[in-house]
Length: 356
Image 1 (tube, rainbow, N blue to C red):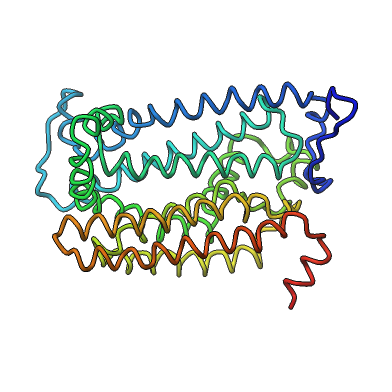
Image 2: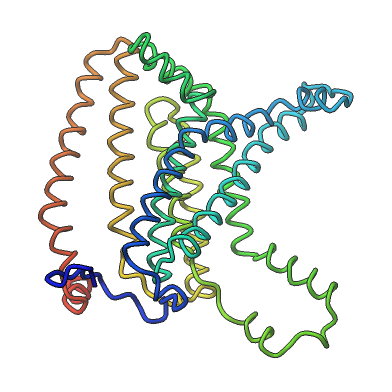
């Protein structure tokens, strides 16, 4: 309800199983104010996200780190040195993003007081994906984003050349990231090794007699798939593969390995491991994500046109406008003929259409 007696704000009712009852009494006006405040915080965070990303990239130079710690440097020609210097930034970035996701979810539940887990999922998906977008361009460009703005103001054409050259240099990092996600994450998801280690440590720390029946029952509850955590990571790899197709074609092979591995993993997880405790109504899995997918396609086509132009291939650059126009027309058609109606379509009718 709103303070105006003649109006009412209507929302889609969430799944009762996803309702956060402790947040029910939080006033809507205060929630809107909190959302605006946190939006400012997240946007400022994106602008300064270059700082932690630069720290992560610095891990690739192990000898510089050893010198800063007054430790004897090692031979950089060793095979293990190249392997470790390529793997450390990827692992550090993954841990940094995990901490960011946990912070976003905590903010949604404790600061914004969102009323349901589906709303929390949608909120986390949106902001986590925006930071994933920022990750790619900050890793490619390198340094502070403010320096790039200054370069753009001084010489607008130089930023295009800088980004094009930097994308080639950053391809090794993204190959390492894609392979790590393909092999490491798929193996961890199927084996559930991290949860086994945690359970083993808990058993060593606490005797079995101190574990209550409620704790044992809670351990048997199937894991819920975290859409807001998993989907942005998938779209991030998709963005890497699509953007690098015209520049580093072999990236398509690594993308194929990744998505084949994720398909096998998710097929196993959804059939034998995961069990959703609530349904989000598609808010976090379609309406929000559709915008990001279309944005990835637009960015890939723009990069292709710019890169072909820098390679002095006007015919190829001109041909790149064809898929760009087709994508734009398809986007408009899908938006006005499908998405608008889906937002007001009854659940039973939508399910019947899906079955057909």
